[in-house]
Length: 380
Image (cartoon, rainbow, N blue to C red; front, side, top):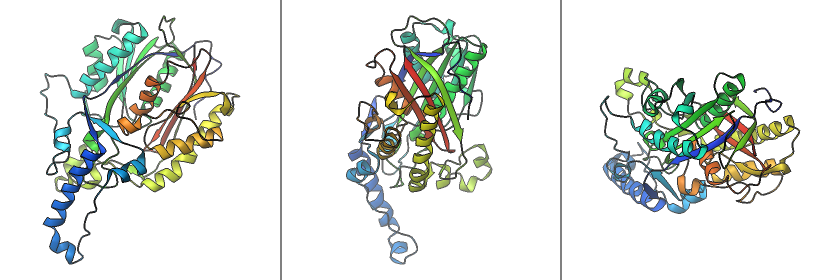
């Protein structure tokens, strides 16, 4: 657990946010149509083995199953064509030369420019860049340093990964640096291209992820931004679990026979994740409130990680002691699906303007690791 930061004289605040959304959206119906065509192809090609009991026949998916299991109705993706081809079923993204801007840098700039404009500052005002997300498209040089260079920012930059909790972990990192005085303004970016590590041939998870990129400006300086949220305090927690994994990395090249192994893409034990993460996150939120001598009824809003509708509803119920309204715990996953670390920031970005001055909300993210992080915010 991290130390309380609410007694600081310095007021660290979020003064700008930005979101990049791909232009293409795939509905459940489109995804299911492709998946079921693949099922027919697989079962036909393996009919003898299925008949002999050597392998199991694949089952159809359905829009009703997806929405009931997750609350997801559609998702934005960067490259839909390959995903919707039953003979490919993964995004086809062209390799770029080393003289070209990387894809994650490109989408980071779009979200970052929005956040900078909203905060009323320029790249010259930024001291540090943190790019935090579930997967980087290369090991090095850091995507953050490429973003820093593209924007013309002095200072320093680094990448970090705490899976779906990355954005709020980065927020804590930024506020710690601001409090320590090493920086005055930090740009946080979460370029999530989740469709690239999803197994679209797996009925249990082919619908889960979408693509998006978010950005935030966090600063301790006086700001004229129209919308500002003080970061009252943050909490971070990690607890090892094998229940959510993606094993692809540079060592996969050392085992060429298994480079396309199912284990090298996202996989999880969903029921175990639900059973273990919900109480863990609810207790963490309650403890955070207690540390600040606050009660749940002081929370005007919960900006929760957007992974699963039932998880969010149950966490909110455990925290509030009652069902939460959509206004109190907004949902964006029905349109975006799970965008990993970007999800709670999208929820915040889309649902931050209507709260009155002095209102308190809680930003929360959780995922593989297990990793979980919370931030208490006050509209100022």
